[in-house]
Image 1 (cartoon, rainbow, N blue to C red):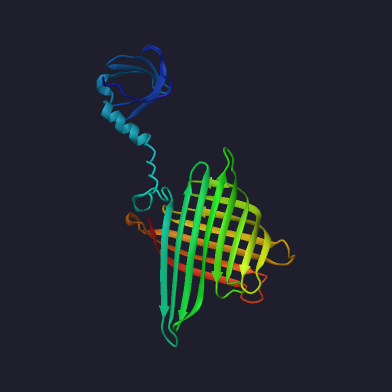
Image 2 (cartoon, helix red, strand yellow):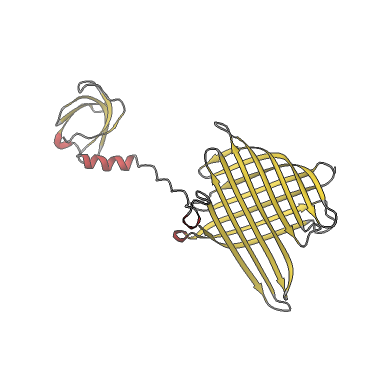
Length: 307
């Protein structure tokens, strides 16, 4: 049977019942209309411009030709990538997108300077939750002595609500920095967020909540805070992504103190088949409660490996 119907919009219950269809011809053309009659080797079509058209078997495409035309007009959706496997052949961190990056810079002259930074990130999402892990370390050695040493570890979970753009979040973060008035800081906060924009090319998620921050060095302080901020992502090109975020923390037991954290990353592939890429970024914190060193800016250029 040489009759090939490309797309049936209304299928009749009997051969004599008319139905709308697109018919592929042997030369590759497609006629759209209402099929009035069909037999094993002919089709009678009512075309909106040509009127009543009778097509014989030799004029109709074979099943192979019709299939090829179908794939050109209606290509199948791209196959979904399988979730990343777990570590070391196990199910540990299965489905997580994991990335490790490192960068080194150095200079020589009146003093020898060597800077090292590393970063480990991961994220996971399913219908009910999102996890995000971010950690990093940066150190500067100046003529053999440590001039800068700072790091952080950040874990966040989002609880996604069914059929809603709202979600709850909980977060815990540890920071250390030998240059700040505090050497160590532990903070935990929770609140509510909203998926204001979520699409194939990006997202924008504002949020607000409450938390506690504890610092160690000399006096130990436990400070309640309110927060408001956002996280966002945008893919301007295939496999390129820009991810900015910022959060404003307001101390609740001191009318004047506040701090602002911000970060931006730009990631791109270098050797895509091997999971090698490049990330350019910067993160900054401003803390109004400190008498000195209120600003802490770190910028980096890392070679990444996705595993």
